[in-house]
Image 1 (cartoon, helix red, strand yellow):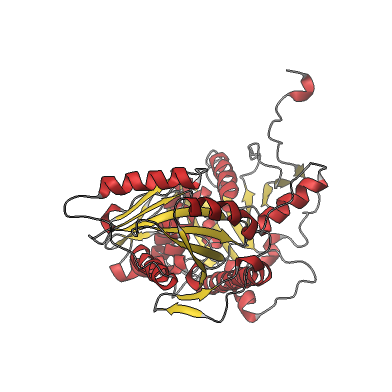
Image 2: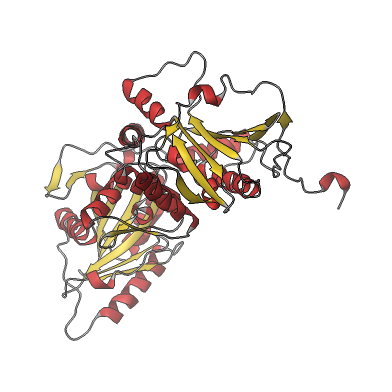
Length: 475
């Protein structure tokens, strides 16, 4: 391997006796730590990797530094750390500045720092200082934001003992030893892959899940924690975020201020959802064929209106791909509008004996528009689906006398829901004739003496009612 191609090693942390790079020293921002009543609280030295979470749980923008004072004639050994961790040395005192980063990288950095601190001599004093270090001219947008920032400003101070433990003696949080022990028990759970958190009651467990659901920290329902009696089970990869929710519920009434940041997270999540809805609405208005005023069917689940595919524009993603290709000098074919894509499919379905019933927009399906067809045997609908982002699929649907249904589609990745008697077959890139043969074959396999295909109402309203039944059963 050439010398200039050697993999880069992690940069050593910078050491400087000069003034700290931050506008103000963190010690000027963090509040005063007072003796813990009934303390000190004896913690395992490994907890030095986790104490920063007490601030992060209260304000995820908080940065947490360490000030370490070692006994005289001793020099603190420091590990190799990422470039965003800086070491500032002064006689007998070391300040570890940990810049803001996502929680995962920070957790790794604090673990390395803690492993180094565990080797320090007894009597070493370690101080954790935290704040969301604002700009000099920073103005808080609201009292709520100020409250959140104040919640993340904390100071915790303790000493390494000769027993290999950390004696937490002072804190800016007016808590009792039991509070700190409970807090650290929650924090330790992040070291497990899929921890379970014991809580006082099932009501508390449900409250934790609801706190999680209202934030943007969990990507979807699968990522949310689950209630298991008087416990909260963690989804894969969600130990830190679930621990945060458990902490916020546990200390909702103090001594940590946890609800200010929760309210901020919930408000931010609502604003994001509203923005996405507005963007989607604007895109739909700009690109979609406006549904007509002619309502075909209205149910408690959806509204079905006539639509006109001839007014639909080129799909958004198709248009972006075309523009990007042109910019790169590639010979990109002109993108087709949904009506142009429909023409050869419509002709193929006609050859198979299908009759066009018309186009419909279903409000429940957002930007998707459907073109409906009645099959020649009276037991199957054909459906072509187009969307304002360029989606284009087609499928065949039949209903069964036992309440089940069969869908054979070009949409990839469809799976059966056998408990609901919803059967699906996927054949991407199949032409209509081949796809229909697959549908007839699958329908024959599902047909028995007791279960037979149901004759369909071969009208546009009948198609809409079939779609409404699908929505009822699927969702």
